[in-house]
Image 1 (cartoon, rainbow, N blue to C red):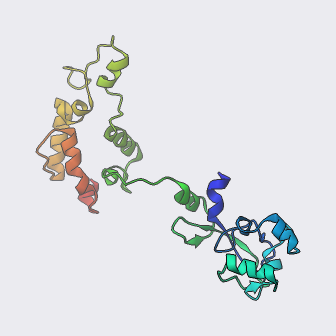
Image 2: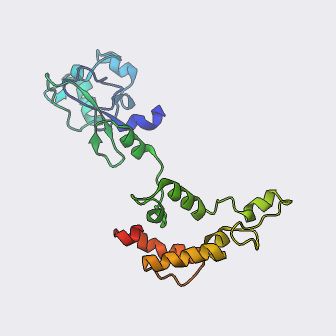
Image 3: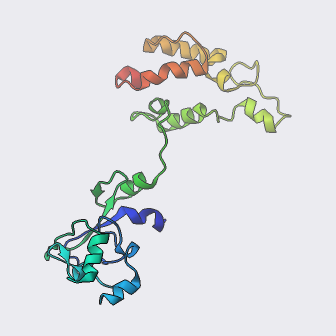
Length: 222
């Protein structure tokens, strides 16, 4: 985890007294240890515990010799001007390059994997959803409900019958809209909501409702 978040943690320089000159991420190019060897540090009269305040003065490298020229060639970016009354501060650099105070949310948003938003997102996870209902719908959209047609794969001896109609084993399509009782409830709801969906197919109904769910009105929420 340390290797994943290290590049996101940035030292905002104040007086430079608490930020490692070599190992903290304070320079625009990153930690100086990526460019300068321990032998080079020792030869220049510094040590591994040196702070930014030991290297920088008035926005420039403190040393005026070939060591400084080498650093300037490697790292030509502007250096911070130290502010004696301002302490150094750690900040979080998001994946888009913006700096902010550390928070669990900012860390998660920066390191989590991203993928394309599925087109049924607004149908399931709108702000007024009932969590239990949203979860069931999400599982149903992934075709992962433990319906009879799935249970039969590993329990071949069970006599599974739809609890609503008693005519056959249920499935996702049967349980939603195709069975006589859910179909009756669905048609009554359509009348109440003034919604016209001329089909009892699960996939067709879902596809027709997806664009409706993106509209921010009371009817789209219902």
